[in-house]
Image (cartoon, rainbow, N blue to C red; front, side, top):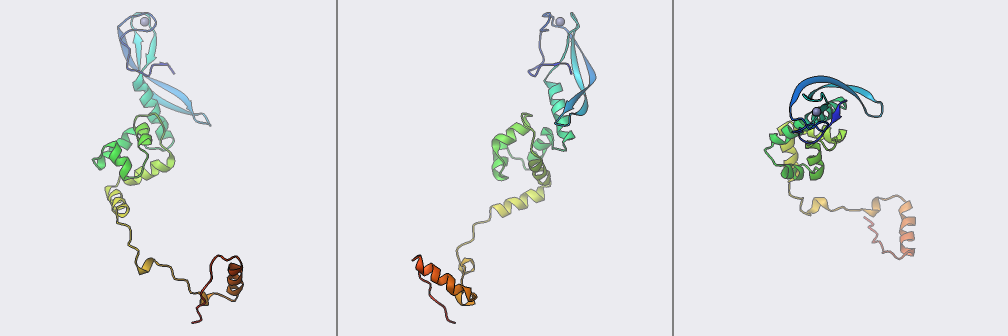
Length: 183
Ligand SMILES: [Zn+2]
């Protein structure tokens, strides 16, 4: 891998101060992950006309990052942006609507952090707008009012004989007294 400069392409050579470069596309391979799998990418390489010093810049960094995403079967940053664009939302609104951490989303999109497998899977589902909109409609349903259907009725007469022991134990502890339903 060439000496990487992650800021914008330099206007002058760090070795000799020259300001004229040629650009070529070169294949490079790098180990990735715990298993050190070899990933191969084609990256633009700048070479100083004066001293022949060559280096890569932020464009190569982006290419390496995206290749690593694909290697892990994760959505690439551009794909994440495209999925957000399906909903026409800015980052903050999208994160809030779909319960994603705003800071995480920003890092995924700007190649500062790999998205998790779980989040990648979730966003992949959201690529289908129907899926996303139905999720939103479910999430935004008003909470059920506390009506009869939500009240839990306990019929003590339905309990087995062991309920008597339970009842006595509760009484001993003076937690509360149970009204026996002899129905
Ligand atoms: Zn130079």
